[in-house]
Image 1 (tube, helix red, strand yellow):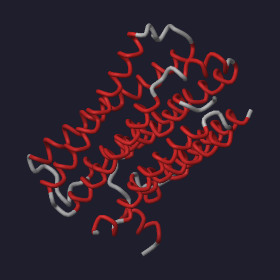
Image 2 (image 1 turned 30 degrees about the vertical axis):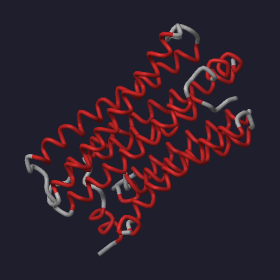
Image 3 (image 1 turned 90 degrees about the vertical axis):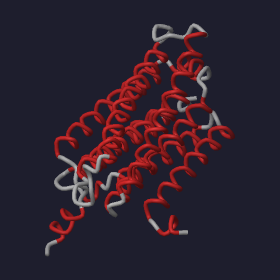
Length: 85
Length: 193
């Protein structure tokens, strides 16, 4: 139970669960644009969780937080635009 | 005490040079991703047909393995901050083991492709497949070397609760390897169809 009291452990378990959800979304709805959008959004949330909870970018000094979030926004939007075009 | 002072005290002890290196690496991969997306949209038929030949199950398993390894690294840092060097070393070794499993899976995947006659020269999709996953694999190997060094030094008692910078820096690098794969997997293995 001590495992569940720690925020980072909960995030890690959520990441594993989100990967399994992504996988089933692909298996069940492969070929649908909406499924691709859902998978991209899940991946983006997962990367944001790794950045915030594991890398602790919010606590980093200087502009690192903004640069990392900017990188994430550029990659996520590029994937979404390419998928919807 | 100002908010910025509090943030600085809480900030992970990662060298600025490491952050510059990590961010430059991430930007390089972002360029790969965008180039791949542009090329894929220009010739989607070849990309979709080629993508169907990939082993998506193995890719999903590798995603779970890297996430698990990142979790072990988080636990290693937490253990070190409690001065529990023994537990820290066990978690670092576990993360290293996950990296090794990732490499074995990737080797199986590459060898199956090569046996089927699929190489980097087969078409544009497989050129991107081998380049992006290959460069990522090189990062995994580099990360494992770092984890091994951290493991040995932890066993020798070089790190403690007052000296966590090396383990935190190595950890941030390993998390970057993980987050890159979180995007590479859907991008190469199943998006676009």
